[in-house]
Each structure stands twice: as C-alpha cells, then as structure tokens.
Amino acid sequence: MFLRNAWYIVAVDDEVSTKPLSRKIMGEDIVLWRKSDGSVAAIEDRCCHRHLPLSMGTVSGDNIRCGYHGYLFDGAGSVIEIPGQAHIPEKARVKSYPVIERWQWVWVWMGDPAQADSAKIPAAFWADHPQWKLSKNLPVRLKCNYHLICDNVLDVTHLTYVHPTTIGAMSLVEFEPVVKEAENGLRVERWITDRPPSPAYKAAGGFTGNVDRFACIEYRVPNFCVNYSNHYEAGYGGWDKDLSRSPRKIEVIALSVPTPETETTCHYFFAFARNFGFDDPAIEDLFSRGMVKVFEEDFAILEAQQARMSGYPDVNQVDSRNDVGVVRARRMLQKRIEEERKSLAK
Image (cartoon, rainbow, N blue to C red; front, side, top):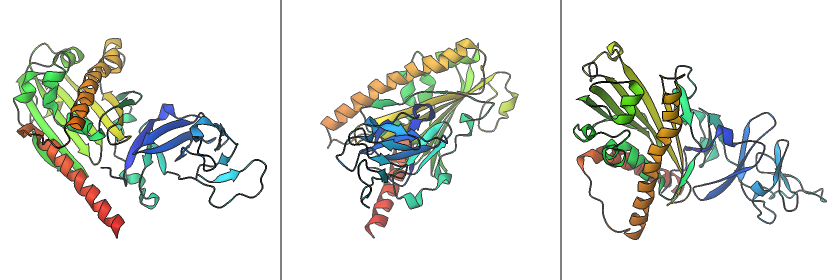
C-alpha cells in the first residue's frame, strides 16, 4: 500500500514550534518539535517506559520530556535522563525519523534512514521565489486513501462537474490529454484553445473574451502533484506558440500533496502559487479563501468515494480515455512498491 523509502510532507513549517506536534503517518505516530537552533526533530510519539504519547509532554531545550514520569528524550530518540536513576538502559530509546525543512514544509523519511537523500525531495522553487506568491494552508485530514487525491488531480475533467461555478469549464472534456514521461513520474498536458474562461480565472485575469488554457498536471511518485493552470489571450497559446507575446496572461500553480495517515485516511497538504496580483486584495482573497472553498468541494467527493469503495471492495472500476494519467501513475507507484518489497525480502 505504501512506498516507505520516500519523503512525505508531515507538517507546514508554521505548525512546528517548541510545543510538541503529533501526527500519524502510515500508521506510525510521530512527534515533532523545534530545537533551540530552529531545526526540527521527529521521533516516535511514545515513551518507551509506559507508552504515554510524548506529545503530551513538554519540550525542554533541544529535548522532549515525557509528561508521565519525566523521561527525557533527545532528537535521536534516545533517553538521556531518567529522574531518580543514574543508569540509562541501552534499550531506552524510540524510533527517530530523518526530517528536513524545505519549500515551507517539513518533510519526513518513513523508510530506511540510510537511504534518506535530501536530493529526492521534489522541487518547488516557486514556493520561495520572489516572483511568485504562495498561499499555503494548514493540512486537512480526510477520510480517504491518499492516492484518491492524486487520481482526482490527474484527471482535470472532474472540474467541469464538481466546480462548474469556479474553475470548471465544459471545454475541459473536449480536448484529449497528452501524457509525457517525467523525472520520477509523468505529466498530463492539455491545450484548450479559443474557449471561454472559467468564472474564477475570468475574474483573476480580467479576460473579456475567449482564452487559450494550458492545463498540466505533474505527478511524482508517490504523492506529489502540481497543477499548472495558465491562461492566455485566445490565439496566443498552443504547443508551438511564444507565450510571452500574449497581451494578457495569468499563471497559477496548485499544489496537492496527500500524506497517508492510514489506508483509508490522509493529511491533505495543499497550496496555491501565482505570479500576478500580489497587491490586489480581490486576487488575494480569491486564492487565500475562494480557492480553499473550491478544494472543499473535492473533500466531499473524495470521502464519499472512499466510503463506497470500502463498501464494495471487490468491484472493478471502469476507466475512460481521460484516466490515462491516473492509470499510469498508479502503475508507476505499484512498481516502485513491489521493487521495494523485493529488496527488503533479500
């Protein structure tokens, strides 16, 4: 079900402080906190003495103290102090996790620590780029398998029916997707030419007529999805066009990174980035509040979908041509999981 040797977002950077933060990832309870130098520690959320969650304790300098009997753990998961006892048993420790803070998120490695290569964290340059503005959100816990969110993002035709009054448009179902191989994943691309813009993007770009819309989803195994929704004046967009010539254009990025909590629940990390309207209150409101409401429409769909899937576990799904990206992404993930299982079995 899960690919363990991979980086997963465990928290938004603002969530982690000197107050313990608990989060369950892949069925494992993790506690996070900030050390005195600002770095993040992540260890198993369980005291090895009597199993009280360490997140119910307190941060003490660089360490965390259990709120039951005062055992003090360092950021590597080792007990470094037992009140009233000088000797510390060698087995007095819990699991620790490699953790890195990057792109305004905190990432945790759930597999073999020896394979935790920071270069494998997906690139999101626009999250820290001065020419882009990021509207990030706290994670939402959803009652659905994490990859249902990836499926949802990879098939943009659902926008037509789930979000008809905001970012959806009938033109999305008129153009077939082009799927391309990408680093550790794939890209699903569409050019939707000379069609009316969706209501939200019409307002965002101030378009008065038809537009050319580039709808592209980039997926990286196991769960990193970036949706590019770029709009240009009609006649200026297309596979071989010089997009810089368009007199009016807007470029929007929607990030979707669902981190598995269990097989049927997940933490949904999402954010929006744009390269326009930095000082426009109406544009800011659209992306800080309006787009969140759009995603909330997906939340209802995803949880209802999971409930039915759980009730009919042996019924096959019927795919369509628009599912080509979904099917290939699933196959990529399953291949990686099987390869990982084989390597662990040796």
